[in-house]
Image 1: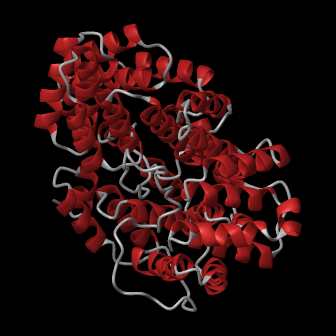
Image 2: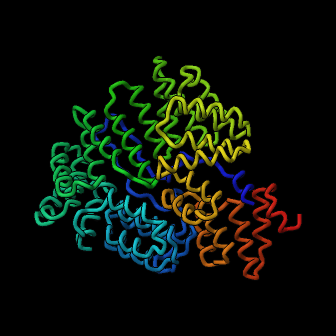
Image 3: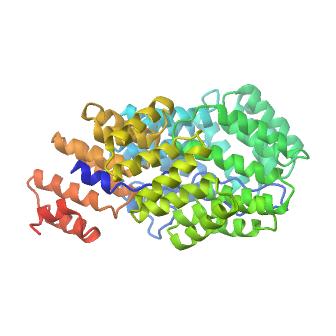
Length: 513
């Protein structure tokens, strides 16, 4: 069984949680910032009342979140606050949902609700990395009163969603008591002035916020965005370098930093093709593939030096979008222009891996490693390929080496967990602590709970895996085993598993096929 689960493991190293990103306009003074998006990027029409007890399904938590978030966007923040609070307090206990809510509440400045969601997390070993990142990235130096949070939420909403940035900001700065006591209030004022294209005042207030709270990375992010609008946008890169030097463990926050870096590079470049290249990279990190492709295609020029990088990132976007023919075409173009281009080599390796051409995949990955030894992604891909070539000893030597060098590589923790029973549960939890959307680890946590006949945890872990991807055949197989162990009918689950993957032998055996 372990061997089979290893074989079906899907390489998704560059995936990122979906966040909405507004269309950039290179002629505008400020490109709008996108706050937290609802749980699912595709809104549904049915809205559940927030007083109903929520379970971890798209039609419950998501709908109730959208209901409250819609109120927040309309600047009805007091009602939204109440709805969010009811949702957090009434939804079925689930650490994944609480982690999601903790991050999203902090992202829109409702820190007391973020604390409430965090306090309800049962297994701190799963959430510690994320909660630390949330606090380092977002939290003000002093706890805000609920009324002040709601008021600042209204100002934030009017700035971002209601085209009232100047009016809302001027009203806020008149509140001298709040402005003198709250670094977050100064951040909101800076955001408002930036949205109004008043870069001088934006700089004054963000500097005040940073002086009051030097540890807050979101303030430094805004400072970088303000600098990027000035006459010397390259100065913003120094702020980006500072943020990059801080240790953020969770994949969502490392993605935020990569996204910011590309945004600042986009603003700092003068050449149109270079600007469009970095804009395309920005959209890639924001998981906006269509916009990324359009920007990157606009970046293609007569300068072959730039085109190799454009074709390379285009190949990555196409590959992640499952357009494998275009991915190969773009990767080969990049490789022809520069045979040492790491991104192109990795995509060519991924394409070979996908078609089970593991020898060629290994060749491409090793060539990439020869040109870049600064990342854990390449050795992980090499190790995964060695596993497919039945060279497990080599593979796990690499995983062990990676873990000694990088303590934020969730793939290495996951693969080691499957190999070493003594570290299994601890390392599976490490994997989801770093990447809470990594469904493979949630599924295997469900499996380990089943093996221990801990049905409550098994159900909890499997429900998270289903929330992330309701079409994963492994979920239905283990859900069938759970039902069977509890004396219930598991046949429908096994049938669903086989319908999703007709070659999945364990489910077929349960059906006597």
